[in-house]
Length: 312
Length: 213
Image (tube, rainbow over all chains, first blue to last red):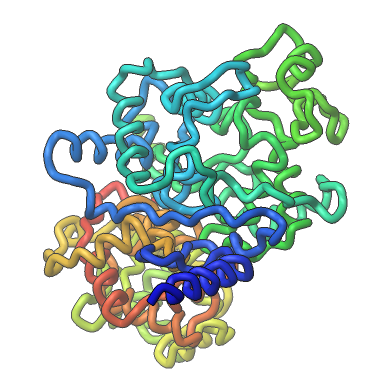
């Protein structure tokens, strides 16, 4: 009797080591994205988590707020009009309405706040982190922390994370950047080839996405209607990891590592709206906010100084 | 007055250009291509009882591609292959343009309601990402109105047509999809899900302003 749990534990531990994405006891679904399995063994396996089903959102005022948060998340320009400066929605980069592993799911972020962030040099609440998405990724302005928009989004994230351990990095949180390196340095020309073959179908040869009735069906990847130079997606490692895990939509994991990095560079070597923290000139802005090889801001690609013709 | 003249000037070339296509649509081309309207309806609105698809208002490049693919066999269909093969390249292009310019039949704005099916709506609007299944509307646009030359409208198509195409993608008899997107998606669906999602889209109203931006 006493030995059974120990034997079970040993089996489970073994299974967890060789197949980090294997179904966790008690989880209702297998981890959605198989790419978790490529995490090397040297890192301790992060616990898996499966968010509750949408149909489990409760009735009543709390449920209404959660549903409002979901609606804002999936149709941000319509639902949070005053705070969105482009046509993007949260769910463009956080797939499946913020539920999908390896697509920076809300349940992977909720329990990691409050958090110190180098980006602004202080401890951020989850709400302040959401404000950053509006300011940079949506190229808009931050809704007040006590606004219905932030509270509804927080409610949605809180509900989705019910049962997840607090303060623990979960498998599938964020984009799978760990140990994801390009075999060769990313290359613009190779990226252009990948883009034409695998991306232009939806995002357009000119990167401006496709719209119906003034609404994005496929989001613009650069230009005045895309995320600005302050957004996380303009950094190569974020973009490459997101693309590798999730693009083309529904065919995540099919691009080679090199293709993902090359096409990330191609996307991020185009002009986009100015960083709202713009410090007077491009060099100063790069020195202050983008002093990393992962940012092409303030560097010259194809003879163009990126950031120098950014729309305001 | 000037406006009337301008309109007339616009109408004359359009009318002249459309003659060939309109006559093929109504009478066939006399070289083996049957009249399109025999199956697709006099207004190009399709036939929900038989599952013949709507052509009116679809993207011209999409229609041209499908006709070319029927002709070449890249899209296998025992009815359309001989018809498309009997059309010249120019006739296929003219028909694609003709049908893309036809107004949406008013009856498609108020399709008969499908029997409510939560599965169909869930797959259409949300997908099932635990199986790498995106929501249909993520590519076919909100409401299934379609976008561009590669993502045709699903709203206003007969349920039997949508279901038959999903089965064709699934079985590999249709494989002219860019990036194998539809083959991959269709292979995830159960027979019940195919019927549910086809029924949901067939019941979506198609606003008169159409599928194009």
